Every structure is written in C-alpha cells, then in structure tokens.
Length: 197
Length: 397
Image (cartoon, chains in turn purple, cyan):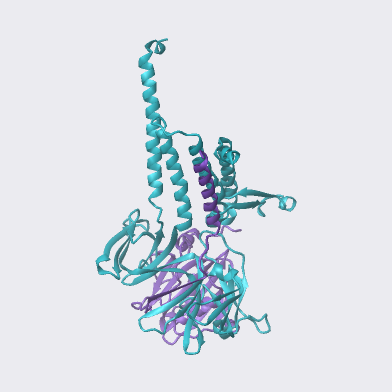
C-alpha cells in the first residue's frame, strides 16, 4: 500500500505521454467573420504594391547596396524599408527593390505591373513582345516596356544569385516615355555587390 | 513494480537523460545549419524520436551517406526527466525544513519543464499588418497555410471553412460541414513555382479557375528552410458536391488579392476557394493611427520605431489606445503585440502577435529556483557559521 502514490504517479505519467501523442485537431474549422469590405486605399503612389513579408527588409539589407549614377535632371530620394533606391524625374518615380527567390516568376511580376497601369494580364507567349534582353551589372536581365492608357511602366527584372532585383520607372505615360533614355543610362550604370564569383 | 519505480527514480537515469539531452542539442545544432531554426526545433525538440543523417553538404558524403544516428526527441527526454525528478522526490526525498531549498529548486525546475511543454503546445505566433488609418481584425501565420472556402452571400457576415494545409495533404477527402461539398487534394506541393504551360506541354490536372483561364501549372521546388524565405505552397484540389465532381482547381498562397477570386458554384450557393496563410480572427479591430520611423538627424540610422494604435472591441468598454514600440508591447485579450517590422514607405506597421497562455510560468519557476538556492546556501552558510563559533580552535592554525 505504501507504493500506491508512486504507482498512481507512474501510471498517470504514461497516460500523459500517450495523450501528448494523440493531440489532433478537427480537419475543418468553420467560423463566421464580420463582412469583409474591400480595402480602399487613399490613392497610393503605387497601387497594388508587392506584399511585404516577415524578413523581407532584412533580406533586402542582406542583398547589399547598389552603385549607380543619377541621370542628369533626375532627383535622388532617400531609400527606405525594402527599397534600395528611389529616384524621381518629372512626375515619374524609379524604384529599385530586391526580393529573395524569383517572386513567382517573370510572368507573374510583369502581369502585376500590367495590372498597376490598367492593362490586362498576358500569357507567356506574349512576353517576347513586351520584353527584351539587357545586361545589368554583367548579368542578363529582361527589359520590360509597358504602355498603359494613362500610366506606363518601363523597367527591368534582374535575377541575381538567388534574388531578384526590380527596377521600375512608373508614372504618367508621357513622363515615362520622355525619360526612357535616362532610365537606360541609369540601368547601364548600375553595379550590384557581387560576392558569388 | 518496485524495480520499475527504482529505475525511474534512479540518479543513473538522470545522468543518461542529461547526456542524451546534450547529444540532442549538439546534433540539433549541426542540423540547424541546413534546416534553419524552425524546422530543427520541430524535428529535434518537438518530437519523441529523431534520426540524424550524415549531411549531404559535408565531405565524404559518397562514402558516409548511410550514417544514421537515432536519438530520443525533446518530448521524450523532457517527459522522462520530469518523471525521473518527481519519482525521485516521491521515493527518496523527505520534506523537511533543512531541505526546503532543494524542494523549491526542484519544484521550480519541474515548473520550467512543464511551462516549456505548455508553450510548445499552446503558444501561437502570427503577424498583423495594418496601414495608417486602416483597421485589421486578423493576423497571419506565414509558416502555416490553409485552404479556405468562403461564402459571402449573407448580408452581415461571411462564413469561412478552413482546412489546414497539413490536414489537406494527408487526408483523403474532407467533407465541409454545413454544406454538401467535399474537398479532395489531388496533388500537394510544399514549395513550388507557378509556370505558364507551353503549347503541347504537360497539361495541368486543373480544369477550373485561374489555372484553366491562364493555363498555369505547378512546378515543384525543394522546400526552403531558410528563416527569411516563405515557401510557395500550392495544390490541385478537386471539389465535389453531393457526389458530383465540380472540377479541379489550382490553389496557391501566391495567388493573392491581385487576382480575381476563384469561385465554386453549386445550386444557388457560391464560395471563394483559396489557399492562404493561416489566419486568426479576433473579436476586435486594430487601427493604426500613426507609425513613426525616427532616424538620427542627417543619417538613415533608425533610433525608434513606434506605432500608435486604437483597439476597437465589439464591447466598447474594452476599447484601448496604446503606443507600441521596442520592448513595450501591448498585452491585450491574452495576446501580446510587438512592433516587428514596417513596409510601404513607413505607412504600414507589422506586429508580431503572440498568444502564450504560459508566459508567466518561466518567471515564476526562475523565482522559485532563485529563492530555493538562497535558502539552500543560506542554511548551509548558517550551519557553517554555527560550527565555527562552536569550535573556535578549529579556525586557528
């Protein structure tokens, strides 16, 4: 009888261990939520921006700083958050962002840009007509040329050692068109920190 | 039975368990290089058994690829240590004033092990992103995904049916309660890319929704264990209603709000079908009044991130206004909101939302252990002083 508490304790311990292994949740969780309203943003500078995820700012910081020459007549704005550089010319803004991986691939990103300026999504077969090859910092990139009804985007997508760099000039179509030469000059001057070779 | 009790209360077992714990930590640390902290924690510490394999990245892999080392996992070791400590107390230790320090230390230790287990089982972390002037009533866990069917036909509320992606990938077919729908996962990809199908290329099993419209298929990718990367979880799911197959959809957590929702129609009902980061909804809304990102003058070096928030609860008496900044989280409704990150040119604040019902226990256990140590050493010191006073010659050379 003197061993009784010990026995009970040992027995309970094993039951507890077994109970741990048996933890399981119901397959479907059903609940109601207050009616979701579509999010209305107060006319953001960049509609439908890339969704920031945990660690993106750190990833961007880890990608290093780029070197470039500011084209004549362009204004340099401070970089912030995941933006590696921001430049302004007339009403158009050039942003440089870097993300880990391929961010869904070239097609998904170009379609996201198209949506931002009110163009319909395209299929992969149409990519050849809106992109052309370009070299940035000695690496092959795609130059993207999208003319929308009011706004346009010209820029480049550069896969670079496991990350993807986005150079995007977005603004009213006439500003973007008029400053393509400056954009190309900028892209030509870009040097990325390359520790992979 | 007495021999079993002797075994579980023996000091030898304690030594073996502590040795095994050290080995577990050592091999866990080796694997952390390849698997990252989250996966390692799951494999090594939130498990009963784990098998360490010779890493591919090491030299002589071709010769040593067969090398495996089975180890007891964290749950098993922690559980056995707990049993060992309690059994030892029940059999060997007698509660007395002299030993009360020891009892306090051990009780603190038991509480610490127990609180770790509680944290493992019950703690939940997620992130909430809110833009200035806007409100959010949910947070997202970027390490877990869920398949959701949302019915938005009611006037005042939406009904959500959520299946965790883990359950989706392992179960054959899941019936959705309150509907006639059944979901079957045709193929599941823990990490992937979505690729446009070329003419004559391998066809995607999906025949509805975005995949059919844009001719997209899933290409598998190796799972990333990096702490900074988010895996693109994708799947082909077949939806049936009352025995009729309605079609196969491609769902993925990269198909976000920028695409029109994928719809499932059956009779006069309709549901949005999506795979998304696991959400937790709250009975309150979190409004971001202002986010501040202060820098040292003339530099880009930040010295302060802070968010001024207003909590709007369904019960107005629970409304609260707070300023959240480094080391000053908001504790509200059993949740802790930490300032974690920011985005959209300093207009969006991202909070880490932690639910940990056992957060107070480690503090209590450390206090108990500290108190126990003070008592134990104090009593010894007192005894020593008394002995010294009792035999003054002993102190002289």
